[in-house]
Length: 251
Image 1 (cartoon, rainbow, N blue to C red):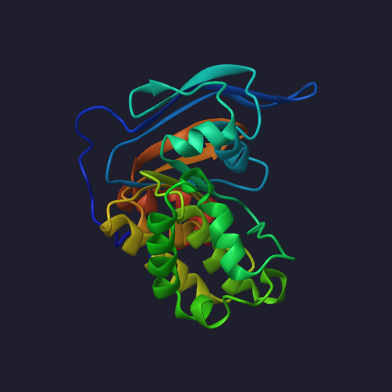
Image 2: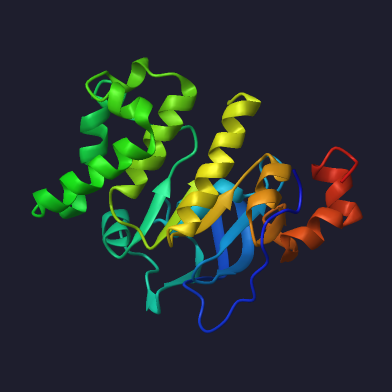
């Protein structure tokens, strides 16, 4: 499952540039000047062990936590310090770790909440919702069901579709395979690739390195709050250090 993604050569300006990101939790510094880039049309993976700073990176980019230092540039605009709702309106969506669906709201209401930036365009929001219900037919079957009663895989589908309701140019995806059975992990991988073919640029944080390197064009390896390795996914999948640490010892 490793190293099958197409390769791309980044051209022009990055869609997202993270420059010298520093994040602290109290006196503990979680990120120590991390930098990365994502170019239009790419899937870029971020892999690393638990506690390396992967999810913290995404949360800082999307405005969920305030960094102690560094800058974010998205589509040529400095978004450093902007609140999350403004970042979403600019076209940067976030599918959070652990799904975080609204358990006491219906599937349909969860999707509507994801489309809140376009509340004035009800026809447009309705069309996007129908597209998302068609993407995952099980959601269409259960659109009146409370989100908290869905299975883990179904909640992940809902979280992805909710993130797409805001019509993002780019999607941050945080551990979409977490807690899923192998068959569902493959479905998530296929969904990530399908979204990319539809034109969505993706920054993918994944604990399951084999899946991440399979779907991504390029990847970053984060250790202890810093980028330690980066490059085309196929090359990293053959790197002995990556194989030993993240791929079970054999490519």
